[in-house]
Length: 291
Image (cartoon, rainbow, N blue to C red; front, side, top):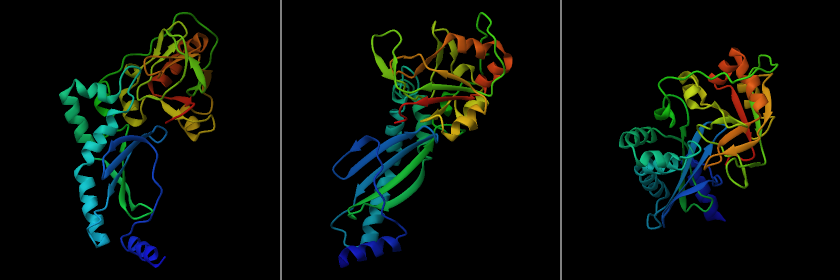
């Protein structure tokens, strides 16, 4: 008991508080090292938690902690690149797929990964490991998606036909639950991605990243991600009077593209002010899971 209490006092002296480990995808698994990553889609962040075992032969806790911290920092760029590689970009690609065939993109992404910000540093509950948490933004000038932004946008295309409609403040798509996979026999949940596409039921393209304004992509990405209709991001991004649609299906190898009712697509595309909302990225998709 006294030993544990003294260790706790040492933690406080180091300015570190015990905390529980963060769940996520395991990206490094070594005898002395583990690292996990997760995408906070709602917050627009890629997060990595690295754990380094303290050297048991080092008697002084501050020295053991400092050595472990130096070791984590020396490998941080590799951890962040591994985490980034697993991020789903679109219906066919993870970031790793893109990096493998583009040395210039890999160099740029490595530079961005080196700018990860440390959010927390603490010892495990049994004082055997030092744990550090880092984050990188998904969007913005230093966001991991920034090398993929198009330099210019194409206009959102007006669909054929006309339906009664009115101006909306945004688009809200409810995509919870298992949905039909277009072009395949089966059902799947919609999965979040950096650049999901939106189709109508005839598989006419309604929206993709090339139609979104570069300024909007840099500010907050193509779409907003929510776990429920009550999520604050719904009003923040899609406004008080969005067009509310229920997804009819998903499409693509990664089940990230959303199929919406054709009637709803026409409501959006008939008026120029509604097409401008799409260009501004005023779209929120409600997912079954944001993991």
